[in-house]
Amino acid sequence: MIQFKPVKTNRIFEDVLVQLKDSILSGRFKPGEKLPSERELSLEFQVSRGVIREAIRALELRGFVGIRQGPAGGAYVTDLTFNQVGNAFLDLFKTNKLSMQDIAQVRLHVEPEVARQAALNFNTSHEDILMKAEQEEHIDYVSYEDRIDRLTRVHKSLARICGNQFFEVIVRSMLMLTAEVVLTVASDHDLLHGPGEHQGVIQAVISGDGDGAAREMARHLQQFSHNLIKMEKTYRQRYS
Image (cartoon, rainbow, N blue to C red):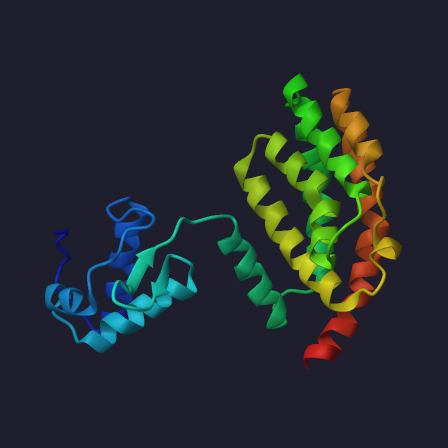
């Protein structure tokens, strides 16, 4: 069994949380593996079970563990994904600590550069990925969620092709937040973003034209971002 250090400071909860999180990040507990029980952790840390429960709850909120019920229940380590960052962005937006103006400004800086790097990093294996993503924009959708997913696949594909995982994290997180607003407020998604609007970006990327890809992405984002900023007021009124 993994041995933890007894906690003897005034910041009991934080110290327990840090040690548990570090044990997950270091790989000592793998995705899908169950953490020791509250009783076992309480004995090893030499703290109350209430402290352990609070620390595990914090891990759950941060996306490090999921809680299962039943005979085999307990805290199980999750496989960390980009969604954890996206959920944090979404929480900040919902609590009015981020605005759509903030997101739009960052997108206009980040995504043209992502498109530029995708063009510079492009190889023939990427062409099918981009063309398929663009073609799927024109297929009849089965739900609004499916519609938004189809219209953002080119952005996600470019972020993956660009070769920088941090760019991909940022792009996916901003797209998650954008989808939240659009799905909540917009009644006609085609007025915001219709199929085929990514063709200029895709062609520039395929041709290896980094500057052209950046320009096309900036042009694409400007009007769309303007519409999203206007939609935020409606979103806030609905949830005020």
